Length: 305
Image (cartoon, rainbow, N blue to C red):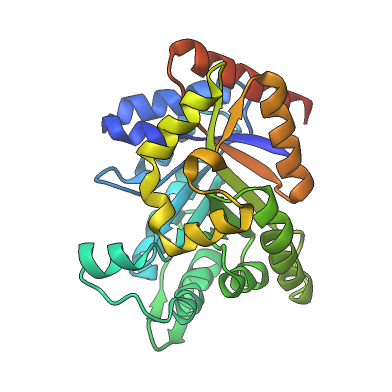
């Protein structure tokens, strides 16, 4: 299992230079990739375009871009521009987000998310692959043709956890990006469903990218309590609540990867055995020592993979 870094917690500082420096350090540490969420008022794809020059051959990706607030033709242009700027290292993660955000924050209607995603992909994918789309759907239409700024197509993944979205991801994309999803959920639902859909569509083995908070620390109980408090809201969102329930976790504090070096290594091995192909580490710590220990262990595991 490859080890990458989810740098999204760095977004709280709203500092573009800091984000690029974080990605650069991740590359210097030899990690497999660096992921950034599209949240707030920093554009993730623009940051990845800037980071590309500082990160060598390391892969870069969005985890994730919400579909509702941007038309697929606009997202295709942004993604292809970034792909051209970073020499073909981009993986574009997509997700429908959550009903409270779509309905309240954006004033839109969160309904029929599977139909929504199918329509979105039917517009987006041909633009990414050829620069031309001619599709009229119930939720999205794209009749468009333009010159692509790159000859390479970005990787494409969905934030898929439920069975129906996993089937779409397996049949039409490179895989799934997970959050708050552990070994039991991956083994019992994620890996089997997406794997069967990919096989039926004659696609390759899907990527299953598991992202969780992680800390190497001597105060496991304190860290789990802390994460349980600061990330409590994730346990109230239906899609994440379903994954936490499959794993038997009361909340995010129980779901995180936490403990000393030996314990964390075992927890990561269990994720790999369950079917995760990559772990995108959302590093957290109570001290600089915690962060240093966590990164050192992740670096060693990735080097040995």
